[in-house]
Length: 69
Image 1 (cartoon, rainbow, N blue to C red):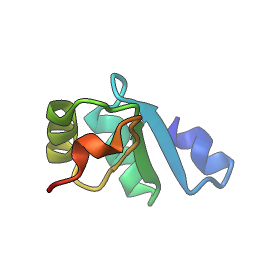
Image 2: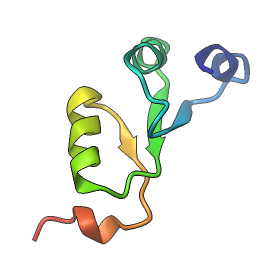
Image 3: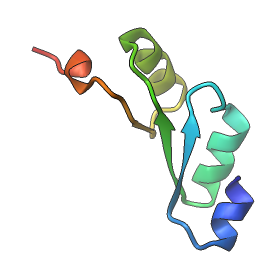
């Protein structure tokens, strides 16, 4: 996925929440690609993903679940 994105001169990749892994994340960051993960609707899963992958974009169907009041 990372190599294909580089061949296409993409600026980032989006990965399903169940397919994100440390190798893909670190390779993408090494090649200066933005990394997004979809579709994260659980606050618990969002906290886990952002802890493991600090510089990641989260895509969700329910943004109101993640707004701190």
